[in-house]
Amino acid sequence: QPINLVALCTTILNQLQKVYKREINLVEDGSTPFIKGNELKIKQVIIIFLDNAIKYSTDKIDVFVESNQGMAVLRIKDYGIGIREEELENIFERFYRVDKARSRETGGTGLGLSIAKNIVKLHNGEIKIQSKENVGTEIIISFPLAKI
Ligand code: ATP
Image 1 (tube, rainbow, N blue to C red):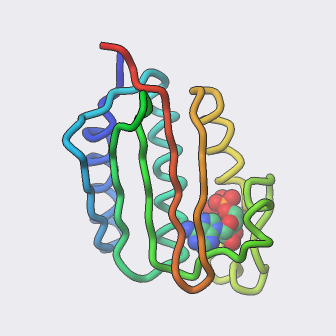
Image 2 (image 1 turned 135 degrees about the vertical axis):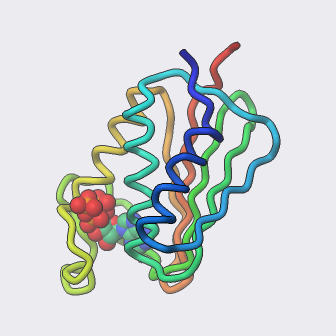
């Protein structure tokens, strides 16, 4: 059955905030978007992006859940180290990690984003990234709205 994106994000945010002791704000536009698909896989996608936001920033994180033109839109915004423009096209490749030196201390395989991209694609969704070095990163994920 359809997945309530606000409810799913609320659950995930509460869990991650406890574990990482990081401020993660949920901002919704009141539209309560529902999407269709595999809830566990969608959850995995959200965790992958939030996990990166937590790893590559130290400040608060803002999560927006909105509806726009037939799509449910999830935006995950951090105010961390960001990604250089010339790296942006590479980061969805399997095992790719920006700058081994800066990544070493945070650990990881570089698989997260390629997994997330595949899951979103399977759900007819899309991912956009806006990032600026030393300013932060915004991940914009959209899925078709479920008709209910
Ligand atoms: P793992 O998948 O095991 O968590 P990872 O975080 O290195 O490892 P990806 O999630 O695929 O791998 O991310 C690829 C690279 O993109 C990261 O190594 C990091 O350099 C960069 N990156 C991803 N998200 C962010 C972010 N929010 N801010 C800055 N850099 C990021």
